[in-house]
Image (cartoon, rainbow, N blue to C red; front, side):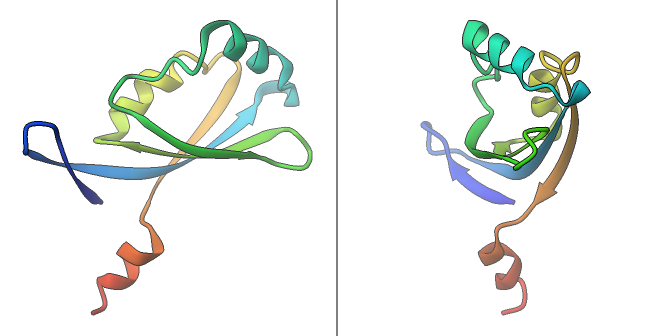
Length: 101
C-alpha cells in the first residue's frame, strides 16, 4: 500500500492491483471496438499504469492503482460482458522488501 499526497495536503492510501483480463471467446476485437468508441471508462480516482497482451492475444495484464478494489469494480462492470477479470492486490518489490528492514 502506498501513501499519496492529495492536492489539499491530506494523505490517502492507494493500492496497486494486477488485473488479468481474459477475453471472452478469446476474441479481442469487440474490446478494441468499444475502447475506440468509449475509451477506458475508468472512474477518475483509478490510475492506469500500463498493460501487456499475451502472445496468444487472449489475455491482457494491467497494473492499476486505486484506493479500494471497489473502485475497480466500477470500471470492470463496464466491460464484464466482454472480459472475465482477475483482480489481484500487489505490492511493489521495494515496498515488499522494505518490510524486512
